[in-house]
Length: 220
Length: 220
DNA sequence: TACTACAAGTTTGTCGGCAAAATGGCCAGG
DNA sequence: CCTGGCCATTTTGCCGACAAACTTGTAGTA
Image 1 (cartoon, chains in turn brown, cyan, purple, red):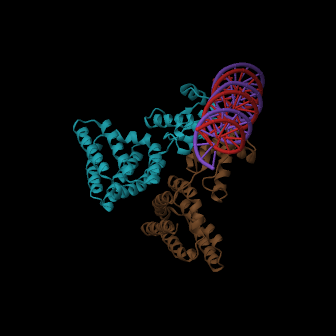
Image 2 (cartoon, chains in turn green, orange, brown, yellow):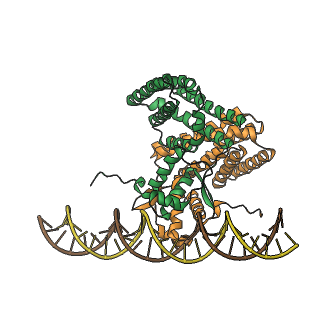
Image 3 (cartoon, chains in turn yellow, orange, blue, cyan):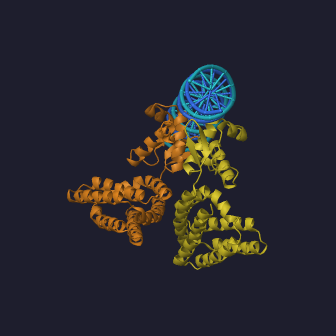
């Protein structure tokens, strides 16, 4: 018996869905944009039924909204929706942070320190884009370190929906210096296995994101 | 222009998915059970492409798992997974409870008191099944009262995944009397607009569910 | 000029069909 | 009697096609 593990991701519709998810995360699609099935067929070289299944998967992710007989559109998230989503992300990742402090391995902590070092350098060299990527990677590592599969998947799904707003936010100047302190303290708390501290740091850190969204509300 | 609102739920795949979700909630399917596409076609009188789209929607909900070239199965949730899911439900519904205390209308509170009264009678007449339904309805009403769309949808999705275990739990004797006190206090806190209190009551209440699942761990 | 009705073109909704892969039974060999 | 490989059946993977619905552009009339 071969060790080849068969995953649903191997199937074409799942590959198409994953490609689209990646495109969403990179901001290639504008909210409200129509996703014409025929175009996606040509783009990925598959039939319409396949594209259709992929779109249903994205619907389950909350990334698209379907208008019968008209189109499948990139889901338009109002700022109010985004704020609510960010609130949910906050409580879920707060939970993850607690579990990360309890379950992180030596390797996890080493990786976190590496990321922290890279982020310090990104701040020094004024590289907000690189910093943003490192920040997301740090959140991912913390998530994995929690060994909390359920919470991790929810968190990933929600962050994907927030990608569009998150990009807007990350372009704000001065943000890296602000968040660096929180990241440093977070890693320290996780390394020390201090669950309560890790939890409260993550809560404050993410509530800062919620506040940033709220302040966007008045700007518009 | 007619006021007819066009919703994706009107489309056949979404109807099929919703029917299946209801069947899941009622425990008509056993975890791990195969969902043969041809059978579903006959059951709902639709083509295979339609069934297929419905199954992808359920996949997005986390209700089924797909094994390529073999079958789509009802997702088997290990007890560990269920505990993690319940933990996420706890933090999300804690958030909802806080918002419910802040945003509940007069009508919401009236409805909550009605439910409470009905639950008292269910306890008196030893009707655990009716009590269980009322309990779920109360949670739903609290969720709606929060006016927190994002959190509400996540919570619904997760509770659907937990339906199987939730049924097991609700059969335990003596549970109604335990939870009634919490429900009474919760409604009172929401009526008073005491967000902090409502939050902590919901947290304790749901953590009791997590504990109940944990105790199930040793029983098996 | 503005508004309605109609018609052509585009896009989605659903179905059946064929090819590929896995399951399970059967047979031959040890 | 057990084991291993082969074949038929079942079920899924994917595609093309036809029908229905919406959109857009146009012509005709008040």
